[in-house]
Image 1 (cartoon, rainbow, N blue to C red):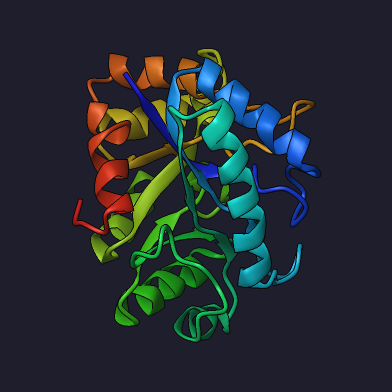
Image 2: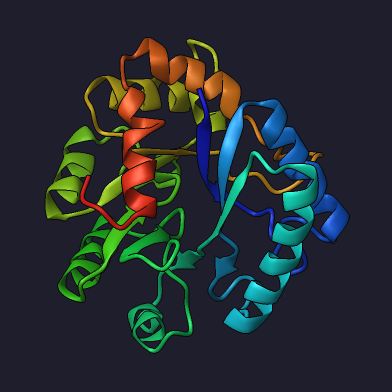
Length: 236
């Protein structure tokens, strides 16, 4: 089974993820070892790490792609971004400054951990009204929705999709975040899985173990159907 990692910081030299081309290749090697055959590189775009020029992103992406084609030809690479939501995020998308996921209408959106629920709600409305399809990055991190199944359900009804981090699924039975994520999976409220990998020290790729948990929940569409459709710009 080939896995698709839709949330990574493997693109080197642009945020707090991979620092060098060598780092990028090392992370791709780890992804390959875990059975990942498609990776979306989603560098940060927003106040914490700046607003990288899309030409720079594509230049680094092309460099990685050329080297990966030689060493890891079985892995398909795609480019997107992780957008830290601000009032100008949508205008930056409309103007081509910020990247969508593989050039589709899907966008991976990050919020502040302590942002109020009304802020998330209005942001999702804004994306949908503007014609984008928002994927909420690592939704389990936000205090406004953590352990609030009703709020997750409401955001989905607005048009949002939910991505959780692989690491959040593989905790023990007393891990509150893991318990919440497994409950979301059971209720069909997770649409995407991503590693959110950054480096080899603290935030390594870890898709394999999380995929095993997903399969136990009979939620294979999270691993295959949904990411394939997203990459092609199709409905989920």
